[in-house]
Length: 208
Image 1 (tube, one colour):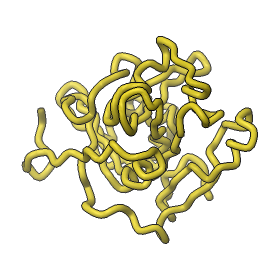
Image 2 (image 1 turned 45 degrees about the vertical axis):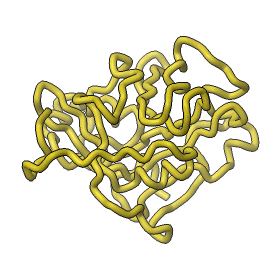
Image 3 (image 1 turned 90 degrees about the vertical axis):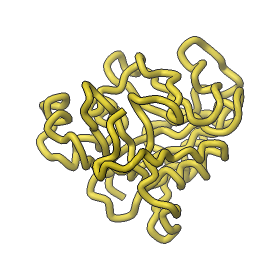
């Protein structure tokens, strides 16, 4: 596996065992890395959403639903759950907690930092670099994330992993919480403040 840019061994983020809201906060400011054809495509995580499992009407596991599509969401924390939606987009989630809980964090936006030329080639219709990973579908396209990576273990994979870019979580005053995006069908759950953003980031999927 290619080392980090400074030549040091990879320091992987591995704090996936908590509930989705806690993991969501911890992920902000960490570095998502995709190794593609030996090249690093990477960015700082600036926007995420928590999905709380079978009680959460917006979660794919609501009511204990378990299908071939969402099976990876029931893996132990630290695995990827990648799904295909609207017949055209992939979205990338980090599974949390213990096996069979069915909880996860959706990665909604990155601040791109490495491999931007390749990201531009993968997303030729995006004009501004700050928009390359501004939204879960754009993020997946810019990093070439699809169902082939579903179920991958972030703790062990050489293809996708999260580097610990910071030791301490982003301070609470620097985190914005809002309702999640695109889950109006979920009733009262649509208004829960389960979207977490780095305050002031120009790379969010939707400005706050």
